[in-house]
Image (cartoon, rainbow, N blue to C red; front, side):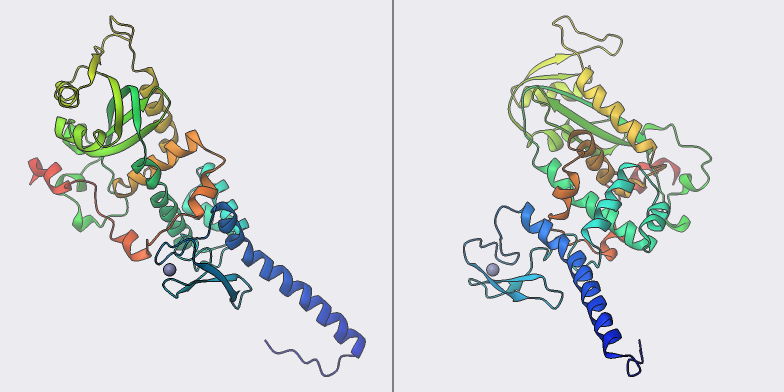
Length: 335
Ligand SMILES: [Zn+2]
């Protein structure tokens, strides 16, 4: 930008300086907010490199006037957003708020980009970073007491995959396959204190090995496991010393009064929500599942939780995401 200021009167110059200073102040404040929010959300400042939290001193400001810190242990400098998912984005906290509004309204990537006035790829990356950040919730879930568990399946979706990379059957498909192997199997569990999670365990019918891999490290002191009549649950309950209450698919309650109503409620909430996104690639499905569970449970806190999460996801990771199981094997009957 080139402005000819030489012809301006001193009075006009003074006005221009005042105007520019206000403008500069507003711009800096806007940029600054996201690091302030992240700082407020974290109870104590921790070094993102060595995780030390009692050896941090303030160390001046960045060129954008953001507080910088120095870790005396590893001698590295950082700011409150270093390595979080909003590190190095030029987006303000307001932009992130708008992004989350669009997401809870289930707007498409294209519509969100138009509303935010940013590139579609930026929105796509933001969305997948957020989805990935929320997986920490699922990983930390602990279940106790009476636990309802049940699985459901959802057709495999190849959205975003090149035709040449797809298994042969899926290329000529007109509607979603009805074969059980061509479906993603999602296991869900909910305990008496409403702790809950949903996790992709594979494709096809659920096996006791899949149940064990998904559930065993989440149960801390379970007493009763309530499931349908699949034998896969029987061997799991036996191995982990859980009293098993099974409910026949034709009935709502078993003879001891147990039902699967809580877990079925979670499943139907999930289906209601995922439908509004109009086709989610199986590669990114787990992220959307985690998001749904969190939106149902903590709609207000989700933004504040997500933006302070550490994230090393890059655009390259996103495009190289793999399927949560072997797709070629799932479609082996067509090779
Ligand atoms: Zn350090």
